[in-house]
Length: 255
Image 1 (cartoon, rainbow, N blue to C red):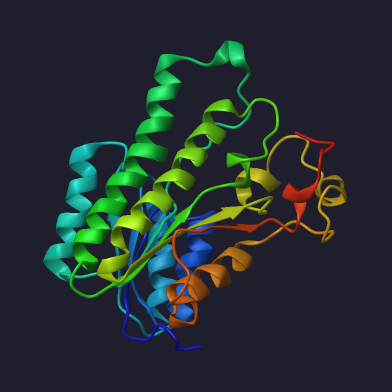
Image 2: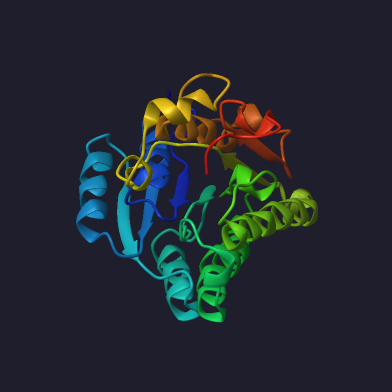
């Protein structure tokens, strides 16, 4: 489990959920971690302690990646402390939940686009700069809803479609630099936001998933370790789906 030993990795949105699972998996594989969070300081500090106990370097940094000055401050700190990156996982994003068409607004569009699209793009660009002379692996976190969605998800699905497109384009342009860029598209992953939602019934959700279970953060963390490792050295520009098969269904019974 030391396939990433000595590597330097950034995980955005790492304090909880999928980001936390990815950070822990990378640390288990030996990577040193730069852990970004936006507002969950106590959770980020808890993660920092957990990761340092694994014997790797780790530090945390707070930034709203929808704000240009804060995004630049994050990468200035990485340049100052490390001067390099081998792995980057762009997990930070905003999920507004169900939003009826009549509730869409310019303000919500700007907020979601700033975080999910602009934030991901400019993180990628700064990561490419830090990997330019050494190669590396960039992993974006999208969603199956880029292609197959449910009512009330117009803005969210649109943003994840943009991440899918930018991943392919950036991979095309960065291949000669030895930088691989891929996109993981999770399906139903049981994070707090999902499990604590009003009316959530795990057994009902599982009925819609061909594998018969919801995913967990370890599923995505292990996938990220694989994509970051040399075992995936010929994979780039791809959106790779981890959803238990749900996106292969013609229809789903739930939102």
